[in-house]
Image 1 (cartoon, rainbow, N blue to C red):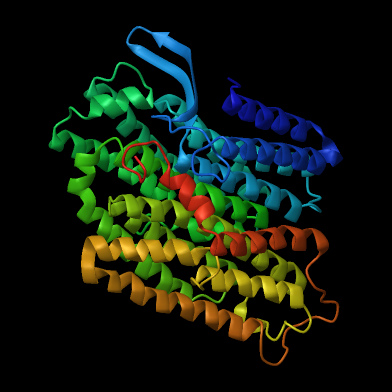
Image 2: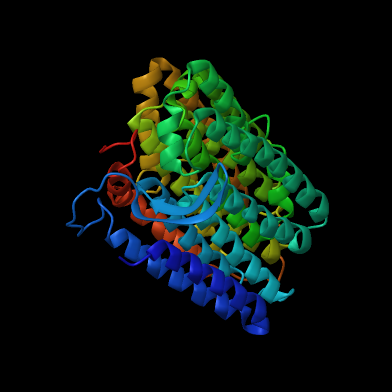
Length: 491
């Protein structure tokens, strides 16, 4: 059996090192690494149940699992254990897509390009590690590894207040990580697990009393909720997005926010189901407040990038709501939503970046009627906006439809709350499009031009995927539904 996951990690690790050392050719090294990563992810999909053409049998547990002894010292048994299921596999695909899109969009980056593209590749390496790690310590090491490159991407390549935003991002997320680590270690020790492996912790946690499960679940919820982020732990996100370079915003919204959702599902909801059941009212309150507050604040923004940042809080609130339902349908919706948001938010942040360097501002009321001047940019902006508000045949529609259906099954008429907020979501996107894309031209410089080729290729890729998975969501649904991990469809 080919140790494919270790091979992917080795590819990303070698690619990161080469990119840092490649000097002016760093963009080519980063692109080659991203393409190799995508090819390996494609190989993973071909051997997974639910993907078209798969003829193998379902295997209990995780697919492509590898486990090697790492640190065995007295009572401490830490292993290098990795594996994938339908949930992690879909998010790994998202990582590979966004790595290529980010590298291509940032192709002309001239400010220390080796460091920039190296940090982009390192961020994707850490994200991949989080999605495949099946050991508590290994998971935490990859989790923390993601913070470092993002801190430097914001702090060095960001806007005027980049240092403040980078420090705020690091403090918030690192404090949350420490609380999460305490919760994970307490989970291992109190459960009496024989090792730090997911399987051992999963089995041992079943013997914990409801009270202990609740107290173990709460620090995990806090640690992962800050990364989402959900209200009231969200204040680092708008500052980080506004100051980050466009590539940093793409990875921050497309990948880093998904780490919180994935971690909550994998290490809290699955492992501590009784504690999760008792804490569900808190989860619902956080979810509903985030959905409403994110939409209202997005509606009041003038800065295009800040508007998209607050809309991310709204969408992550829907993800949290779907996870909180605790049903197979709800968890399916959560994973679909995370994938859809990763694609759409990346497209919208790229659009905001192109608007900024084409028109010299991101202020929505200051620029208008740009469609005749930049038809390609306007088309892709409109596609991203319509996808984000849930237009049928685009990627977010099947995800949000499944989430609302799961909410109706579990909570009945409370589904009207997120449904009503969708009207507000449509409102701020339509408000933005009406002012920026249509009407009489204003704020358009004489040298304004349509989207550059490399940016258009990156954005066009995301537009194509938004349509593909909007029309054929079954490509992802079948993979997630055939996840062999307990608690999900098909198990």
